[in-house]
Image 1 (cartoon, rainbow, N blue to C red):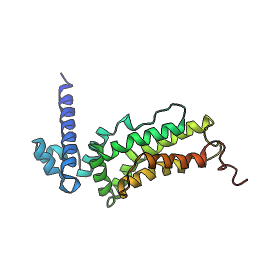
Image 2 (cartoon, helix red, strand yellow):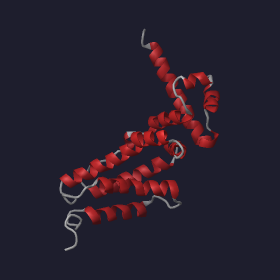
Image 3 (cartoon, rainbow, N blue to C red):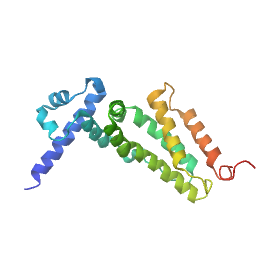
Image 4 (cartoon, one colour):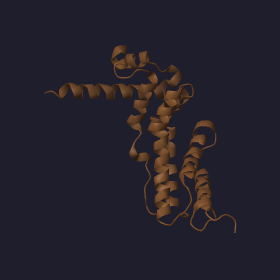
Length: 200
């Protein structure tokens, strides 16, 4: 059948992505390279280079493999509860294998690679920000948040605060931190706040 080579190719790609995830978890970015992936997978380097031009490109696809809709927002009609639930649910997913080690490795490499940084933002960070914006925009339309506030920057702040704690701080993303962040957002933008009109 004509689709058998395609299925075999897809299976080999999945295998190589899984090997990359496993190695990233074990050795971190410093010990990760195309040669190591090839050895673990039992293939030649050319097999990997045919699919990915660099280790960073391979890592991005490996990250895509495990970046699932589990990080999406639920919508119960209560924006405060939904923000809180999503942050508490996503924090462990971002901090632990398989996403955590690979994501940290890609972010570290992106600091010296402008093209990779742009790709990382487009494929992952922008998706997270957009998902957050979409949820709070629905809440705004439903009357839970002030009607005329621009919520683009607040969406970025909500995500960025947690990413800061996860990447740069030793402080945990725990229930206290999440509650404080969501309370601050609701105090500023919840219906009845003074964001739109300024001081009385």
